[in-house]
Image (cartoon, rainbow over all chains, first blue to last red; front, side, top):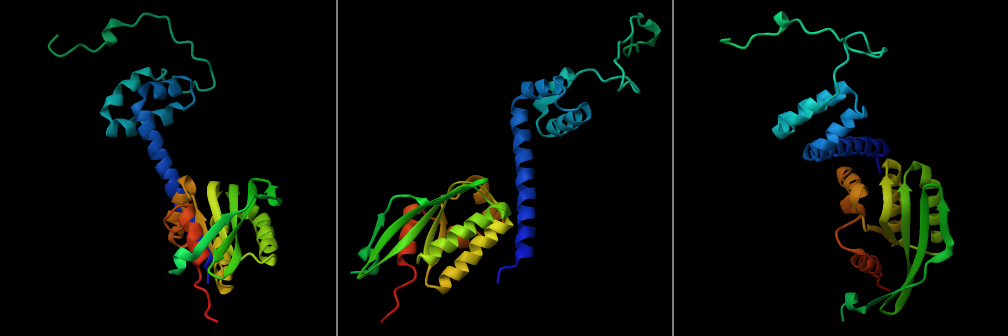
Length: 103
Length: 151
């Protein structure tokens, strides 16, 4: 006698595992193509928090992808998600720049 | 001479009048004639193109009932172009297998690959539905199974 419920349960488990394997495979592919990750991030196809999370995972396994992080678009200032950030033109106060040790 | 050497399998042409395209599944029916010793009988190869899931089971059942009514008892399900299968599809295949074996028939899948193969593996049913071997091997096993009943 075929246990229909058991088959459904097995199918769900199988699909979860397939999804996990697909994600792992995609991560491997992305890690081998840092410029692709950078393009995805730069075009905003991957939200910054997700991009940072992905980069964190990738860096743990593939340290060579660390350079991608500098290609991320600048983080918007807090509270400005709904507004266009125009930045500031004022010169930076030199006293705010940390001095290197021994300087 | 062993029974295995005394089997001839002759492919027929795909039957457009029996084949069906419905939604995400297309089924092409190809009959074979098997000559085994003194007897001869038919064998059906079902070429599936698409998905065997809950939403395509109606058409599969319809075609299967029609073919069984015509006397078909041995089925080779060719999954070369099968893109997906779910628990409903697997259950349907297992039900068919049980029913056909009660009637001295059999069912096997062949050309199972990719996602479908992984799903069947992970659901632990591939060995039952699609034993190792290519389509030729599967056809031969279907032609030989079950052993003829002694008169």
